[in-house]
Amino acid sequence: MVAPPCRVGYKHRVMKANSVPAWLVACMALVLASCGTKTKETYVERPVEQLYNEGVDALLQERFATASKAFDEVERQHPYSTWATKAQLMAAYAHYQNNKYDDAIVAADRFIQLNPSNRDVGYAYYLKAICYYEQITDVQRDARMTELALRSLDEVVRRFPESTFARDARLKIDLTYDHLAGKEMEVGRFYMTRGQYVGAINRFKAVVDRFQTTSHVPEALHRLVESYIALGLVEEARKTAAVLGHNYPGTDWYRDAFALVTTGELPPEERPGIARRVWRTVNPF
View 1 (cartoon, one colour):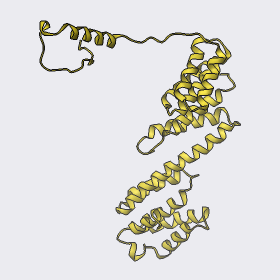
View 2: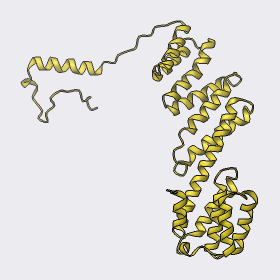
View 3: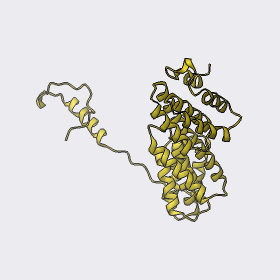
């Protein structure tokens, strides 16, 4: 076994035992002894109210790591008290506030398993869902986290439909779907700038079919009209423009689409590729 790197002034040259001064041998023995000694925490049993209030005070002072330890200590020292049940959920909340999402999810799951009929179990489900939701950074790169967030948010809505948690969960579900649709639109626009209209059509159709309640549907229909005309599929473009006009009659997207199907072709300046039109939409200034 390799000795711990606690030696001071290490040299590659190995010294003989009889060449080392006695005082240096004593110092090295003390250093090695100190490295191998582990400090043991002294167990002090304290009243449950004191431990719980210590955790609450630490939360209010935003010392979240201290708070989670205090709440864990409540359960460790007083496992059968009513405060232990509360401390389990408070520990999960402290981990969440400390951005320790994995620890918070584990603690919330444990609370749900041990207290399925507790009146606060709805909050545990909600806290778990929020931990997943706040970890969504790029829905294209980390689809698993998005899936877990949507599944957990939907579970909150199904189990506690009349709660305040469900109302917020519905809002976050809509925002997540809108984000997913936005990424599909981004990829579709990229394909259009490259003249890859078939790939663009697939992306825009996905928005129309899968994310019908999002704010991206009018633009997706309009981009479909553009892509169909670019491929010479005028009849498909007219049908899509009719759907756009029926559902979003007063929008600029419909007016532009109507102008396109009336002429049956893209404007001359757009024919080599509609990069300019897409660029103006993404960067209006």
